Length: 131
Image (cartoon, rainbow, N blue to C red; front, side, top):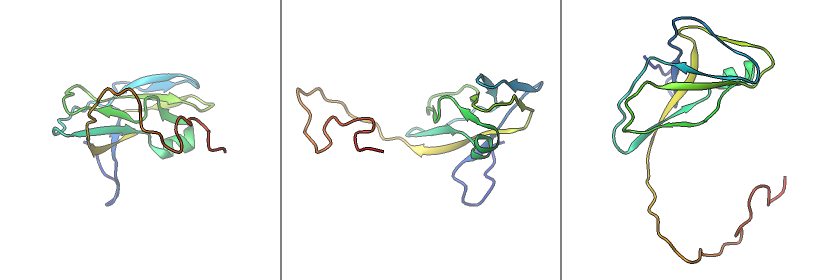
């Protein structure tokens, strides 16, 4: 079962559910099963996020981070781990591999227009304000 490790933790840990150990080579990724399926209330989502300790110590991250789990999904939660590090990374059954955070969902309403309102930033994109 997912567990919050501290009283004020925003995320609960997700663990690997494996029959045999997995190894992720440097520069590779793999999908890790958790053995967990959940039912999220309408109007909410769950986000799968990396664990900072795995990132700092081993260079392990999640490819589609944060990964969104929609309220209508009922399948197993799977984690796409990536090895950004320089050494192979071993995953054993029960290892904490990710965290899960729940959020309210606000859905946008779209309207077709000919022009958008101008702002000071306007079309300034990546790096337009400098380093």
